Image 1 (cartoon, helix red, strand yellow):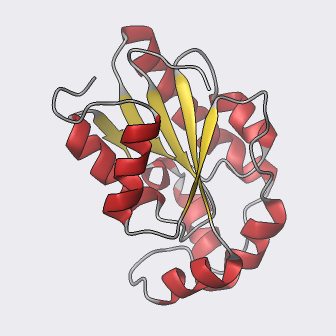
Image 2 (cartoon, rainbow, N blue to C red; image 1 turned 90 degrees about the vertical axis):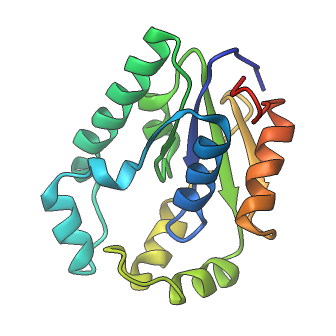
Image 3 (cartoon, one colour; image 1 turned 30 degrees about the vertical axis):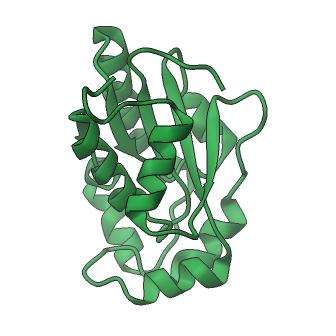
Length: 174
C-alpha cells in the first residue's frame, strides 16, 4: 500500500459496514474535508433503493463520476479528504482510483453487518438489499491501493486503526 502526503481516503464496503461513521470520525480527527457519498446519488437512485430495488451498473455510473470529480478536485489541489462510497466492484473503484487515493475496505460477515443494519434508523437503504450488496462485492486486490479492516471493533477503534495503519497523525492532520 503506497503512502502519500495528502491522500483521499475512500471508505468502502457494503451498506451497514460503518462507512459513514468511521469516515466522519476520521475527517473530524484529521481536520480533513468529508463527503458523504450517499449525498451524491441522483434522486432517481435514492428512490429506487427506497423502493427496495438494487441499483444497476447504469444507475451507478453518474454517481461514481460525481464521487470521482470530488476526489479529483482534492487530489489535484493536494487537499486531503475522506469520502464514503460502497465501491463494491473493481470496475467502480477503477473510476475512483488514482494518485493519492487509498481505499479503506470495511469488511465483515453478513450476520454482523445485518445486525448493524437492523439497528439503523432513517437510512434510505433497506436491509433487504444487503444480499444484493454481498453478491456484487468484489474485494480489493493486490493491484489496488487499499487496506482491509474488520468491522469487529467500535467505530472509534476502527478509525484509530486506520490512522495507525496509514501512519496519519490526528494531531496535525498529516
